[in-house]
Length: 255
Image (cartoon, rainbow, N blue to C red; front, side, top):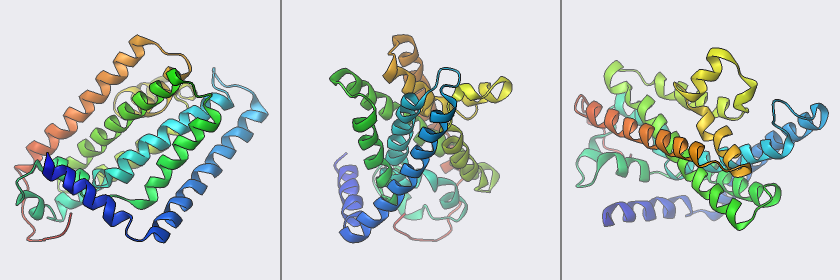
């Protein structure tokens, strides 16, 4: 455990070594998020509500998905790179260390740009989420669950590269869950909606958490927690089994 904590400290230190660059990278991502939020506010100002979703609830959704996405893609940046690292033989250095390979891999790299998502999400919740002690506690809990689910899903799809020899699955999973999670799940219908609760669990990284903040339900909370744990376990299991098929590329990198 001490080794993993030291790894995380080193990763954060590397990301913050150049504070000016860190600040500018975070600002770029925050501006991108602001544009997306303004779009939705203007959209709902025109149409009112769509299937129970209005401007206030969509801002909650954005606060959740940017915060959770920032944790996964910022603090655990290698979650997105598992597939490419497996295909290109870049895991040699990880396997030589006396730590859990997946945990070390996830903690080894921090992406400064995506830390702007965390800052934006927290700020948006404070400004537009009608925060109370209770709502803040639920927000923290659902963001943690959404980040766990997203990380597990990206590791799962990325780890398929061990078996198929191609890394496109990880990138497709990354784009699918982020893009689809940016929309309220209720705007979809039929097979597409079912997929957002199962194959690509985008509903559980944004819409379901936003509903729980707005109107907490213990049953839905339990489902969110169960799905998050299930995808985290599936990601770990697939990576662990796939690692047995890993072929060294004799490439020694900092992972």
